Image 1 (cartoon, rainbow, N blue to C red):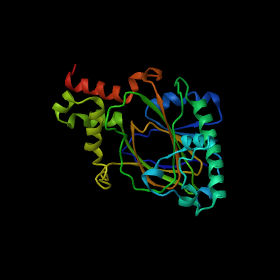
Image 2: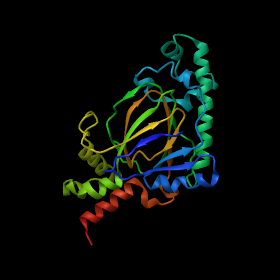
Image 3: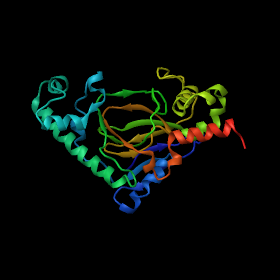
Image 4: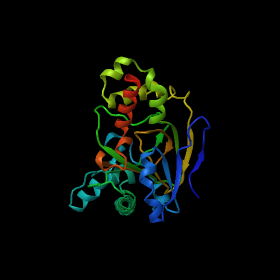
Length: 284
């Protein structure tokens, strides 16, 4: 079985499926990714102990919210413990369970790294960045990823559900949809003066509301996706609006890729914005 997708007819259908066991099919992933698709892998999941991960959660504190998985395992192997209170905070002081957690996390990361190596195509990735999220998320705001400062690199993102229950997402407009249909609604002075990153930030707020406005975005249509335990999906979170509606445990990998390594650099998220801005400011 695969993710269960309920498609909203008011939105483009940008979900794609490829066979995760077929090397030839995996070579098609990068063009789909750069084309603002949500890509689901058939016939391949991450192997892990779902019942074990469902039996605990990390505290929802800043320290644990985005658990630095690679760094934790690397430093632990060197004798340094980045999370010295892990057994007490998460496993009732049971060091055996904490050790099993490390074993499981190591196995999961090896599988994710192998998957990224198989799918990266033209992307040259010095080191994969992997974040473990082990505390529940409820009704996150709908958004595209935006930043305090403009980030000129591309990124390659994959998500894995590490739970015995489905992880529930909403997705909505793509960046290209918003640029085409809503960018002209921003003040002309913003289009003339802001950099592309800040334009995306303003557009994100204009369409979906603020980060704390959980209900400001309810007027926007959305697809509904239920991702199965162990399921893998790729999506550029800068170009497809998304919302974690419910989830307890997951892995997300965000690898930095130079813009020049893209299959089509014109599809970089900032390039899309600059091109559309120019169309509005200097119509042919």
